Every structure is written in structure tokens, then in C-alpha cells.
Image 1: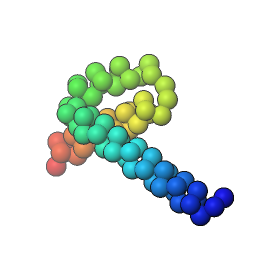
Image 2: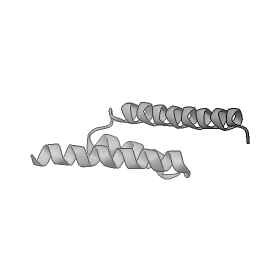
Image 3: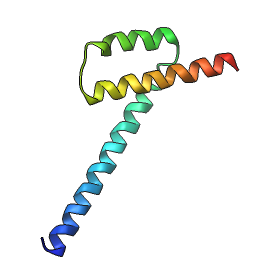
Length: 75
């Protein structure tokens, strides 16, 4: 692999990672509107039937939102 090809590969990988991070942050921001247990439960029920990394990420973000809500309530 030439230096030019290697550099192109590195740039492509970095761009892909940056884009994935931006998508994750955008999804996290969209899901930030689901704050109460009832709202989170409703969306969690819709996501429960889904499989794959995006569904798992959504469940993770919603769980974080629920933990944040619980911490705010108990403080």
C-alpha cells in the first residue's frame, strides 16, 4: 500500500467515525425529549420489537434518560 493510499484510507476511516459520532449525537439529542418514565416506557415498548445496534443504542440512551430523571427526582 502506498503512502497516498494509506493516507486516503485513514482519512476515510476518520470521516466515517466522525459521521457516526454526529449521527449518535443527533439521535441522543432527539431522544432527550423523552424524559419521564411514561414517555420512556412508551418509546421503549416500540423499540422492544426491534433488533440491531441502532435499537440497542436507543434502549441505552432511553435508560440513561430514565436514570437522569430518577436522579433528579431523588435529589
